[in-house]
Image (cartoon, rainbow, N blue to C red; front, side, top):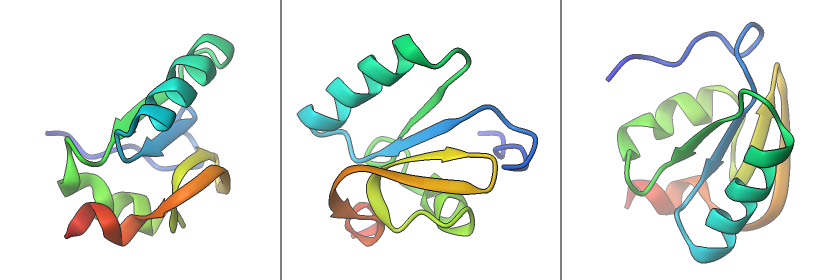
Length: 82
């Protein structure tokens, strides 16, 4: 699997844990934000360190450039690495 590009030049990314609420948020934001990348960390736990490097601590979180915006947070990043 390829590494994600630098957050300063990449499209927005939504990191989530795959729960129903996160999937609904992913669908809604995906329709509203062109080019949104969606990363389900339960399906791809190997990407959790990259999310952490970008400043993600709660899920779901939207990363836009260097900004991390928690969206209805209800899970920690560590939860996906159990």
